[in-house]
Structures are given as C-alpha cells and as structure tokens.
Length: 103
Figure 1 (cartoon, one colour):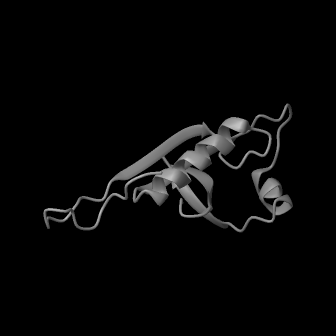
Figure 2: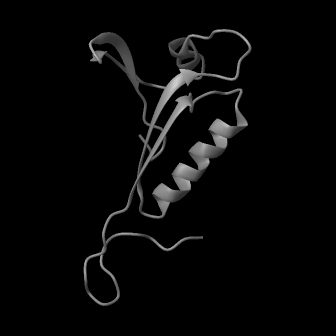
C-alpha cells in the first residue's frame, strides 16, 4: 500500500527518516470516538510506511460525563506508565502509552 521511507535509496544515497508528531486536546484511546480510532489507524499506517510517529494528547473524551483515563486504560487492559511531572511550574500527571508502533 505504501513505499517504505528511510533506509537506502535506489541511487545508493541514504534516505532521511520522516517524523510525524500528532498533538491534540482529545484522547486517542477514547473507545467512544471513531475519530480517535481513525487517527490511530492512520498513524499505524504511516509508521508501517517507515515514518516515526508520536502522539501527544490530553484526556478529553467523547463521553458525556467526566471519565478517569487510568480507569479506561485498566478496563481496556492497556498497559501504561504514569509519571509525576511539572508543566509551567504546575504539577501534572503524565501517562505514557505505546500502541502498536506508535508512542
């Protein structure tokens, strides 16, 4: 479906690795969002074509009520790593999750 990016080109020169960073205030592990699923599928497709893909997303979900992301991850049985960080001097909780070949 795609030609891989990276490695060596036909003329013998080294091809450049292409990188994609996706950033969104909406959560990409939202089981109630078709857009989240489609975004992951596209990142996986690009990753399979040789792109290095990373996604940085907040925890806004399509559910009508407030939902704890860590509870959703547990219910979906998806492993993650939690870290306490400071963002602009404010304490925050950072959840790291790899899905397929995207981080």
